[in-house]
Length: 537
Image (tube, rainbow, N blue to C red):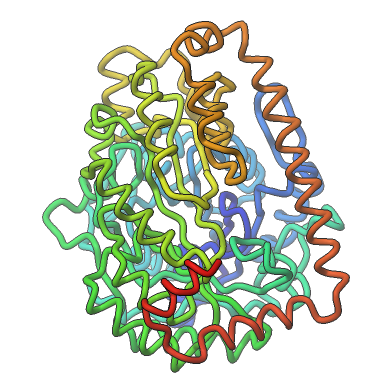
């Protein structure tokens, strides 16, 4: 028997969850294939009204690859619901048992079961294995924990099994790509077998791209999150597993073992990305021990994610000395009132302290990215102004990753909005809303300008005059700021492409950059040296 897992929501092929499930099943001698359908390949989509779907060629390829599969699992986020429906309908017609997993299926099993046979809620390793074996043996799936299904017209929700606490008991994620991994190819428009060249092309897209064509490996040292933000999937999962330890960490031995294994299988890798929800949430002394080992055992440039509450100068120093060259952090809002709605337990002082710690090492890193959430239905103009003022106090340099708030089903903000009758059409306002496209308001445009490191801040403060806000924040001016944002973005893109072209024309550009990193982190740097170099620059 063969199971095929399909990843439709990850922007590349990192797909940590699907790779983890595949590795777990393969470790139990089960046959598994993976199909990666990166959603960033826009030209491979066809549109039907507001619904974005796969081309007929992609659907045909999926059916061909899954022809010998008995079970097909699809990992679903809310924004990709329409495409999951499209895939499921085609697979059901082909006689496959269709299983949905992921956060949308967990929170909305009734949605999934309109087309899927089964839903797996929450952590899926043991459930998927038991389901595989039951179907393989011709047995019923009734009673398998974490499953949701329809029986006699009623929704059955089996009990949730405990979280896996010992992450070291799990195999390394599946990167044995030859023969059993397939990917939507941006050049052919078809799903093709994964090859080293295709993998390298996909792996070259990421946070370290400005340095050249680097091939970065992405992994996680943990499961869960230390925070309980009301807009995030962790808000849902914490509720499901309320009486258990939610944030769990792998041992450093297990993590470094995975990195050694990945470098052996893919010797072309030259950067690492740890995309834990907050890698910095570990105590300072633990971070320092990690840094010591990483520098000796891996020694490649790497990227991480942090939060204002968990970032300090000591952690930054240890990680930069070990090779950290990029960091992103969620700030989300500058308004205490909105922070309370989000359950974000930090102050403006936390944000300034964390960003000062990051800025101290600006000569040794790429520009950091800070995340903001805009277009909150509970926000007042004064709340947005507070966010703008905060970003004008954050030390340069930085880039922004602004996003519109989406009321994902099951989250705290969704429940609040439903209770206040703020949602009229869930499919249009939630399922099909792109989070990366904030509304083109005047204040959103000023927040966008705050990340222009060469733009003097007094200009933005002048533009934030209350009279200007009263005039330009009105809806009739939105098209103007949409056009301005469009042309500014295009100008930046052209400029970056030009600079990148110049850089790539230099002989051995990427190799020189890597050599520079190796030299930079060869010796342990002390803060006095860094401070002196910062002053000299």
